[in-house]
Every structure is written in C-alpha cells, then in structure tokens.
Amino acid sequence: MSTDDEAQDAVDAAASAAALRASDEPVYRATPQEGIRRFFTKYAAFHGRASRSEFWWAYAMNLAVFFAVGIAVEMVNSVVGPEAARPTTASTVIGVVYLAYVLATLLPSIAVFVRRLHDANLAGWWILLTLIPFAGVVIGVILSVLPRQGYGTRFDRA
Image 1 (cartoon, rainbow, N blue to C red):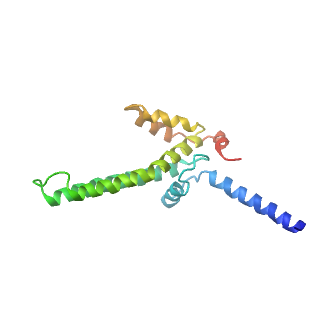
Image 2 (image 1 turned 180 degrees about the horizontal axis):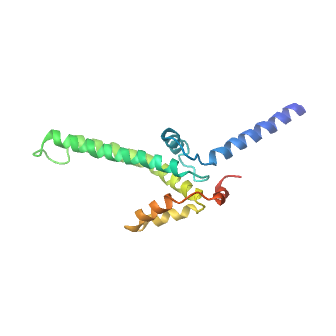
Image 3 (image 1 turned 30 degrees about the vertical axis):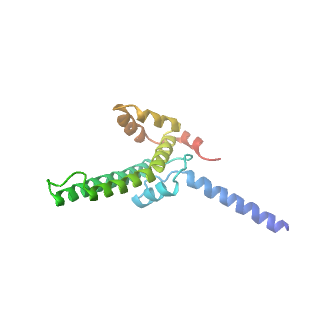
C-alpha cells in the first residue's frame, strides 16, 4: 500500500467520522419532512441530540395518526348503525393496524424524547419521570419544551 493510499484512507476515515458526528447534531428549525425523516432514520439512536422542532414534528405526526384512526373508527361505526354489535370487524381491523403502528413507532418515540432531553443537557433517564401517573404528562411536556443548552454536546459521540 502506498503512502497516497494511506493518506486517502485517513481522509476517508475522518470524513466518515465527521458525517457520523453531524448526524448526532440536532437540526434546529427543522421542516416537517426533516423532523419526520430523522425520527425514522435515527430509529433507535439514543445518543446525540434532537431539537424541539424535530421532537414536535414527530409528536405531531403521531398525534395526527391517532386522530385519523379515531375518526376512521367513528366513521365505520356510523356506517353500520347503532344496532350493530360492537366492536365491528372493520373497527377491529383498524385497531389492529393502529396497534402495529404504535408498536413500530414506540422505540423511535422514546429515542427522540431521550435525544430531546440530551439537547436540554439532561440525561435520558429523566424520561422515567413521564411514568408518574397524571403528573407524568405535564412533566413530559415541560421537559420537551426546555431550551437547548450548549453543554448538551456532551451526549454527542466523540
């Protein structure tokens, strides 16, 4: 192997390390497409940081799916009429599809929340506070709107 090849390998390694580090950095003022794309591409990445916009676009997508499923179930139930046995087959199918969606997005939802906590310079374990009955939702909202902190870079890969 020549010195030129070794030099090029070093440059390639530095470029790939920089690309890896860049993906750990949050995208501030992310568009809906950027936020949702990072939600799925960083499916199980618990390192790095996520901006508020990344977090809220993913949350908005999950909320929109939730309401769309609820509307679909109500539409199906209104078509079959009040005398039909509940749950109807169609609403059961919709429920099973929604359950599959929830299970498929559970891990990335937790991951984006942990990365959001990292951007606010909090350890990911703070997510456990959201498990507190009743107050957990309020705590989760408060934690997710905290401003970014410069010290949050400690959660990026070195």
